[in-house]
Image 1 (spheres, rainbow, N blue to C red):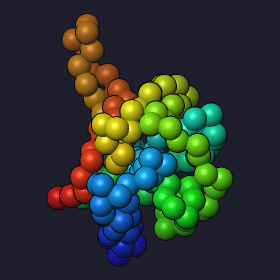
Image 2: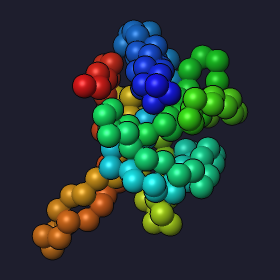
Image 3: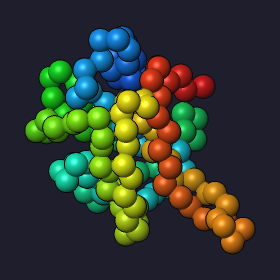
Image 4: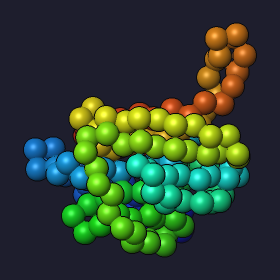
Length: 150
């Protein structure tokens, strides 16, 4: 029941943030920690500000997302984790987000241009490496419109 409520809350959050494409302010974005997490320890910082530290996340088998999301709206910067919403100091966002992600001690840096989409889905799924081996890789999908989870 709680996981279902969390999924509804996350989808509502995404809808609220992406309600109007034309009225979106440059400082608004959402980062949903999504697929292929299995009791992984995660640290996340954006533009040099540490937001999440040593959180253990697991992707839900049905929704494909975790119970962790970060978003910024007119009221502030928020971290939503297991139905607990924490307000942090606003980020100065100027089109580009510098994401530093550490998963199980392995650091990855990504630069995200919000003009390509301000709804971000961070996944940690297996992909084929250049050598042909299956490796977990951090990927970020960007969306400009509401994301529908089926």
